[in-house]
Amino acid sequence: MTGGITSPEAGWRQADRGPATQRTGKKRRRGGGRGRGEIAMVDDVEFTSYYGRQIVKTPVWKSPDVPLYLFLGGAAGSSSILAALADATDRPTLTKVGRYTAGGGAILSVVALVHDLGRPERFLHMLRVFKVTSPLSVGTYILSPFSAAAGATAAVELLGWFPRLKRFGGVVSALFGGPLATYTGVLLANTAVPSWHAAHTQLPFVFGGSGMAAGGGISMIFVPVEEAGPARKMAIAGAAIELAAMHKVESDHGILSEPFHQGRPGKLIQAAKTATAAGAGLAAIAGRTRVGSVAAGALLAAGSLLTRFGVFEAGIASTKDPKYVVIPQRERLASGQHDHSSTITR
Image (cartoon, rainbow, N blue to C red; front, side, top):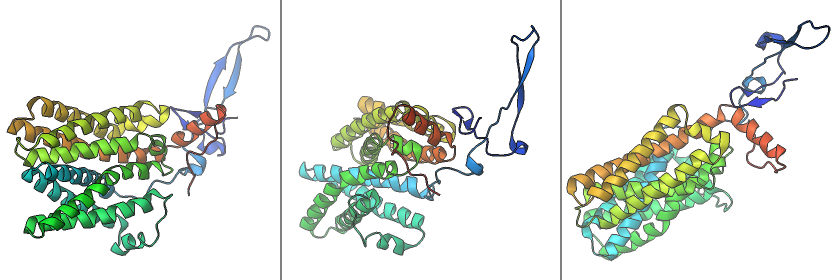
């Protein structure tokens, strides 16, 4: 019987279908029995999934809407923290750039989210209930006050009104900035998508570090080098966190790490790592020069953006091959572990 047999090369094999859908080969085995060769007919049957359907549904989230939402939210969250620190240490240009980045990123991330939802009222419906066990619900209540505070702060900064309100709004947005930059990693990991769920302990660090690299990098582009010290330090630290956490995502989860190496997702993630590492190195070596600061900032922001697209597409790819569901489940069963990693959906 070949039903349910798994292998990394063949996906999920099963013998539920009739002979017309099977691919059969003959293998010759020689053995005893009067010294004559014996021919054994062995079915070599290969299938993609049960009845040709996916085991786990591919998320309906669209690209580029969702990857852009992930990137913009991370950059906005870290920029709000950077702006609050700059305001407290009397760096006016860094303060302004951080507030503009936070406010603009917050507004654009909401636009991307609403566009993915299809109708604006769907976002409002998400605010009707607060459920602490749902990362999506909690994330909505992080994004909403952050966007309001960051957007208002950027507006009054641009208009030059109400300096005290400007500082208060900056502090409020900074309080929500850290959770905003990391909750999306929790959100992805809480789904039934195999490769996202497997990396549930690393994705928040990947996204948090990536957000720091993006926010710091964007500020390095627009802020004079004499004020850009905090942005440079944040960007380098964020890049180090992102690269370390991403390495564990790519190497710690056996077959579920495959989608992060293969095909288009693998190319995106490799490009992201190259840009992030190059940007961090350039920031450390030449970040105190104007040309070096701009180039490093652009590389760091590009690396952060590519990371979001790569992680998103790797998760999507892992839903389309049944081996990423079946093989890990069988490994857990063989080791006596309770299987609670995913819910099979239709």
